[in-house]
Length: 286
Image (cartoon, rainbow, N blue to C red; front, side):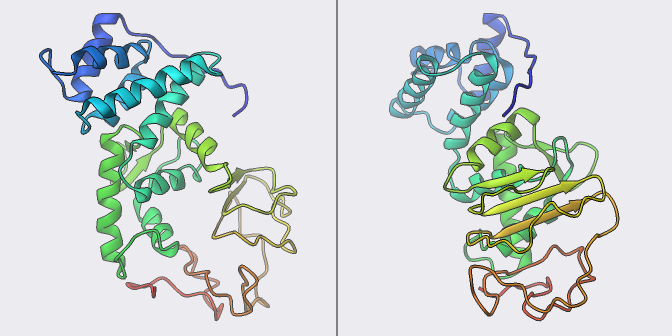
């Protein structure tokens, strides 16, 4: 995650306690106030940490869930945390782990494929999720849109995702939350790559987002095999650099029929002549 410095103002104890109770939906006579106060204390007065931890526990008002959270926070503190940045990261990861569904977790990770401080179109998340068959029982795109709207609401209520504020139907990812998501997504289970400097030698990624602001066409070695790759996102700040007139088949996972590559982003209309790539429509076959 580099050596980026994050400046965070710490709240006085009284303000921190008030914020925690507000976001966790608890009052002064909350039956678990003793353990709640200890959990709040582990956030060290850091507003973002307080908010994400409190919201993660808002719907889990059982002694077991609060004690589990407290143990995890203390374990992080006694482990390898080296400063404020690591402390905030660990609290955000706890909130991520408390998300109720794998769909919500993966959708949040998909948001990290977009550049920092980027306005993320919710429609792109719909298309990516449907193309990856992320959602159960959603054959039609309108069903996927309803599902994504519900998941976005869940992520916003957890303060892991932000309403864009300027553009309707767009969301944003806080830069610190994005760093945590990239850290989670870089691990073996997912192995996402977001890069503006090419792919390198590794070929086990499941999702790649390549961003280029110049005319360097060598970000992706197309002769290389990526056996786990399910999502490839290419972002160019200039005209599309590739000549694709001769391309008639895109092969994934060694399949000679190109099975598995389900869907292209709806804005890419100039290469829909590919016979084994389906053009986005109102339905996507399972």
